[in-house]
Each structure stands twice: as C-alpha cells, then as structure tokens.
Image 1: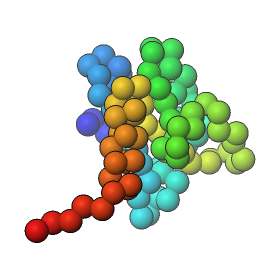
Image 2 (image 1 turned 90 degrees about the vertical axis):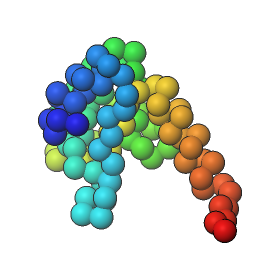
Image 3 (image 1 turned 45 degrees about the vertical axis):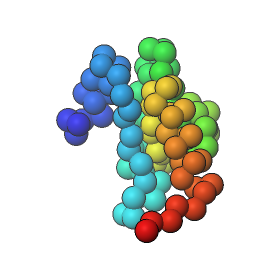
Length: 100
C-alpha cells in the first residue's frame, strides 16, 4: 500500500491482488470520487482484464450514473479476488459461527 491510488492500482495490475477503498464510519460512500478517480482507473483496470465494482453487489463502477460532480464511490478490483471476496462474505453472513 503506497497511499496513491494510481501507484497502488499500477502495482496491483503488475503483481496481482486487490485494490480496495471501502466505506468507513467517516466516509459512508468511500473517499474516492467517481468522475475523476474511480471511472478513469476502472476503465484502465477493465482494459487490463480486471474487474472494477462498487462493493454494493457486483455493480460495475463504469455503470454508475453520476448524480453530482464530486460524487464519491467505493472501488474494488481484481476478477478472481472479487469473486473470492463475495463468496467469503456470503459464507460469513449466511451462517452462524459459535465459539467455545
């Protein structure tokens, strides 16, 4: 993690992995701006064979219709890792785990 989206996405494209910038308590919609951060990087990621989703289901970032100039968006990418992440979330939310 470098702290610069362009550098982190470049590293992830070259070496694999996941780039995530999820929501948190101070930024419910994430911190990345849809029009000039998420959309350009999503285009590059998808052209490189990756997958870019918002984290809300499997909604593609490039399919989000902007409603304001500085609209924020979640950004997650990597086709295999996203599939594994969604499977893990499904498994964790669909069953109860008890600790002894």
